[in-house]
Image 1 (cartoon, rainbow, N blue to C red):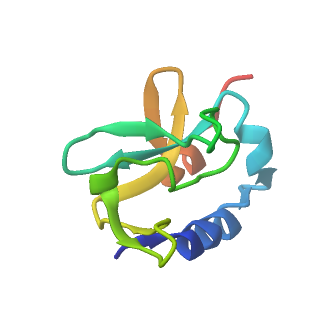
Image 2: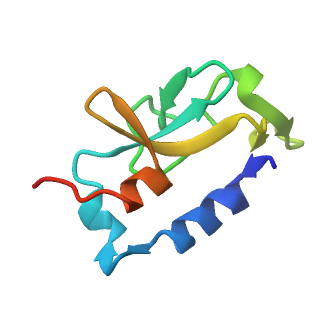
Length: 105
């Protein structure tokens, strides 16, 4: 399965509420990021201005992570080995890992 902007929005909707806790409460210290499951390479989600994004954006990821581009040259689909998650400190977490843990304050 390829990850697209639509898939990211669906993930956000699916995980918007985790065990009665709003995901925005959990995201203190969590930065949107992506991981290549094949290589374990990770990248933060970056805005066009080069700043860390508050949401998952696929436009700033490595070219070889992109499976499909639109007519204007924008990334629209990532390769099947790329997953969305979050960085906290130096560790990458998937959405499922965040859901299954209780985080410190």
